[in-house]
Image (tube, rainbow, N blue to C red; front, side):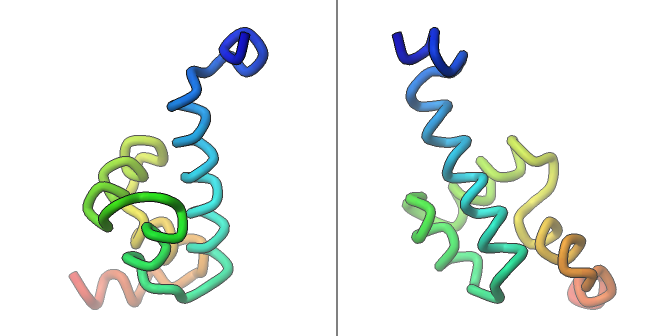
Length: 78
């Protein structure tokens, strides 16, 4: 019934919601990535980064820098 209503499995739905919440936090705050990961229900920053990159096509740090207009800061750290 859940899949029929949402077109997603329960796990995929929860993961999608966690990624959406992470996007909001990454754009609107300067909270460290490890804290964003924990706040969104991921056990580790590494797992969060892997799942985020799979869904968004880029790591969370790059996402944050591009959305906040701080791409230069990202390049300086590389």
